[in-house]
Image (cartoon, rainbow, N blue to C red; front, top):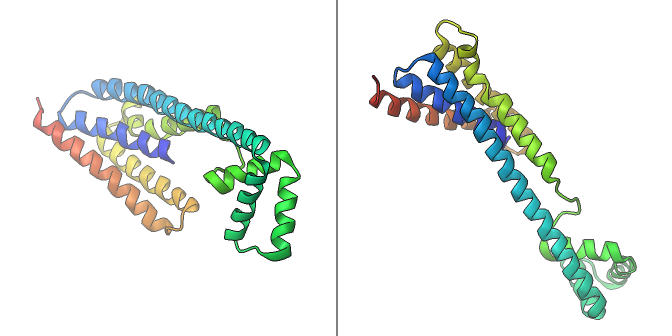
Length: 209
C-alpha cells in the first residue's frame, strides 16, 4: 500500500508540476520515468534496509534470550510465569503453561521475544519486502504517465482522471487491512494525493514559460 500510494502521488505530482509550468510532454515523460525508476528503487532499498535491520535486531535478541536462559534459567522461568500471569492465568493452569513453554528451548526463546519485546513469531523477509514495494511503486507510478507515453490528446486531463481513480482504488483496497470503511479510506487517499498534485501544479504555474 505504501509503495503504491507513494508511486502514484510522487509521479503525478511531477506530472502536475511540469504541466503547470507549461513544459512539453517530452519533459513530463522524461522526469516522470526518472522518478518512477529512481524513487521506486530508493523506496525498495529503504524497505530492504529497514526490514533487514528489524531481522538483525530480532536475531540479536534471540541470542540474548538464549544466553539468559542458559545462565539464569530460574530467573527466566519467573519471567515466563509473570507474562502468563499478566495474561490472566493463575494456579494450576499457570504452572502447567509455564512448564510447557520452558520444556522446549526454541519455544521458550520465541515466547520471551513475543512477551518481553513484542516481536512476532514470523521472521520478516527483506528481499520480499523490497520486491513488493518496488513492484507496487512501478505499477501505480506509471499510471499518470500512460497518456503521455501513448501520445493521447488532452493527456494531462486523462492523467488526472486516471490518477484520481487510482487513488480511490488504492484507498479502497487499503480498507481490507484496517477498520476504516472503504469509502472513507478511499476519500482520504484521494484527498492526500489530490492535495499533493494541486500544490505541485500551483508551484509549476509560478515558473510557467
